[in-house]
Length: 320
Image 1 (cartoon, one colour):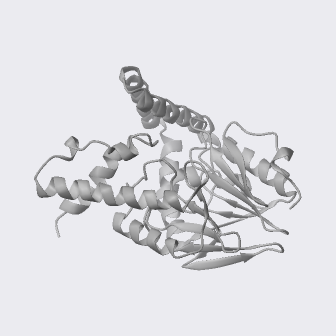
Image 2 (image 1 turned 180 degrees about the horizontal axis):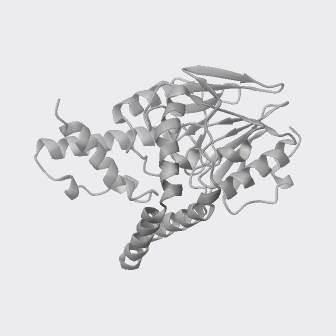
Image 3 (image 1 turned 30 degrees about the vertical axis):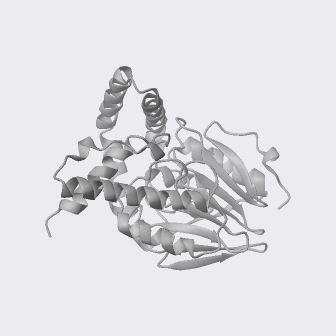
């Protein structure tokens, strides 16, 4: 593990952070097409990458960074969950690397994810139309924070569409159910799933000796958690189990490298959303009247606050 960040010239898509010796966080730069974070891990005799960004170009830069930093080809890629900002760059790493996920994540990718890309390739017009609609909304938006986030989203969408014709949906080649260890000559990492919270199945990568975890979107740093495909109560339960592990440093799915403090903040956020919606349902009030609590007003992913409220509302009010 002799190489350093200095060996890599850099990328517009992410900023490299040397978390500990041989572990590098690739923190997404907003509006560049990476969208989610990734990580590069030097196992000694092998190199492992966690998640692969939204666009081919961002993934190519990640691949180059991994080789330069570790001096070895990438042997393994972990998909923490099925969302495209963590899986769309998979094709860049094959066939040399094995791609790993839970069996549930692979099943979703093999069906919903693959079909969605096929539809996008066959008929990209709905995406272009949505991008134009966002452009019009940006012109009218008076909230500068929200306007900037919408501009970042639109810029990332443009980059995604630029590379869409080259995309080949690439599925995991190895799956596991609950836990799997990868042993390198210098370190061992554990792939762990406690089920689904953010999505139907979420994996995190645990480094017991370094007291470190790459958490995927189970933990976000100063970003609204994305609950649209999630199970809020299970998410809280999963984070409760993660709290029992010996972890000090976290590479989150979005935002800067953080600590258990941010994990506790995510738990607090989900609890707050559930309480706000529960109170509105009980008092027969509209969730449209719920505003972002002061604690979360500076967080990114502002637009997800509304969709999170709706997700929880639908769960609370669906027929038994």
